[in-house]
Image (cartoon, rainbow, N blue to C red; front, side, top):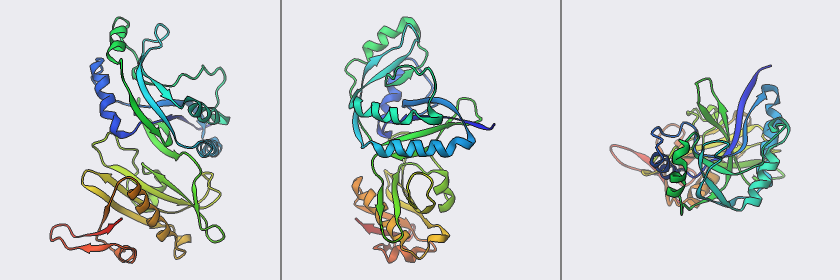
Length: 312
């Protein structure tokens, strides 16, 4: 039976990755993170491919059951002598974290003989035992606030040691609009999943690797019931970066064209950009720009880089 290997985790904000990498280097780890820094909720587990639908429903139900909450990455800890690790401990709303984890570890994601859940973010998976005490002293006073707004799913690929972020599930109830007509479940993501990439004809990509990289901003509209099984109706894909906020693609699936879904997704994408501090967004001038012009974008006549812009 075909299987895939998954684990479910919380990924810190990209702005913190450089700090976490600096901690690792100070502890003697030269190479960058091969796996995104994370707090594991469901350890790696082999899942039958024909059970992935059940996994999706478990993940969506767990994410929707828990509103966003606050954590803090704090002082160093270790699992030594059992395992010579150095990690950051986790403080904050541990009750919310525990509830989320308990709902995730179900069905195909459950495993017999689970160890007690100790939330942590590993910096050094295998440290020199004689250096652990000094490493822990160097991490005293660590305090990195963390607003948790989503869970992520990572999948093991054929490359040795390579894990790829394949899904992001925002916490809390999804936004459902236009009940009574064509309803859409709207999700704001900070990665480009494969389904959105295929529809919008862009490259799939995971979350930003650090605070210096452009961060994806995606709004996806899905048909109800919103449990991960609804058809993808439309999506808008853009980035937030040092050069500003840019809408790069917007597409509506054929069965849903002419029903207002594109306008709905564009409005949600612009609102999401504004909530993240954007005051102006831009888009390239290309075929189909007439849709953007009808929705508040105006031409910016620049000889080297003509664009459409919209004030938020």
